[in-house]
Image (cartoon, rainbow over all chains, first blue to last red):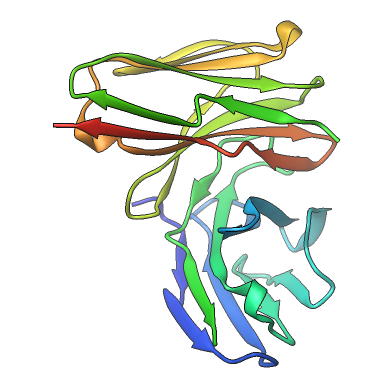
Length: 115
Length: 107
């Protein structure tokens, strides 16, 4: 058990809809990362937050947004969903502030299916 | 941008065999990690290894940053080692994944 909790585990919705994915980091970790894994693109880095502050952006679409709350949990919001957004979305957490400079611990992912 | 190449793309081995997975990268990096994605889709951090050598049980990793490659060694393979192994680089606040090596260990 990595200590990172993601909910929901599965999500099925339709094109054009909006969903929110949630992540609770390991106790003591201040950084949260979001990743997307799809058959077409493989694993991609989306965004990194540290203690509520956005630290780095990867290949995150404008239709997607994220935030990290004072209790350190994070939410990834996906809107105007398209078929191509179907993917496994992972959250990871780590201790430090600098992007990617510490070992990361992953949640089990949220599998999003767009019909 | 920086390019990451992992080899081989696929590997099938008998239980008990040893293997070496390679990650080449095209430019200097801030750090490098190896992840394992098991057949159930879970991602596990194996090594955080920007340079040097580390060992953890049957697994070890070596990164030679000046020559832009990293190696992951798996000794005495077990069926639980099956899955995909990703090399992950970090440079200038960008995190880049290799396409992975898919390892299948036969009982």
